[in-house]
Image (cartoon, one colour):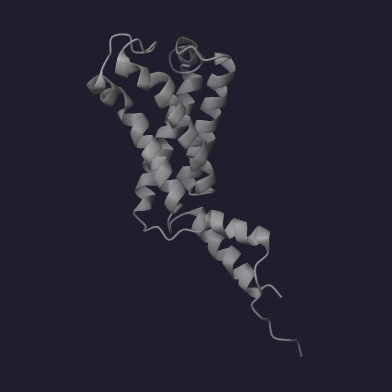
Length: 173
């Protein structure tokens, strides 16, 4: 006869993993995940397909150091994180670098529009031009922050892994 299993306190590693994957977000979060993830994947791929216009060339025109390197790193991060968001896998972890990415894009390329003299938008100046040029970056920033806060939702790999992790922690001898 074996001893009955008792509930034990989960290990620190299981607890961290459970927190990273846990989500109580409604199913509708899938729409945010799919739209944000799809835009990141497309924009990341475009940095490789059109490097002069949207990758290294754009980074160079914006005045960033080592534009060739940064263009490919940014493109790779956008594709990888976008795919993770689409799958709902490690959603919070994937959203965090995209928040940094969009904040950087806004600060480097869009905020200078407010006072004129933005290297990528020489014909734009003022609030309305900024609002127009920054709309996609702001939407992606908000969408990424939302996903960081609420997680992937019930229709995701994270939710499936979270259920498995919680079961594992609850039945550990």
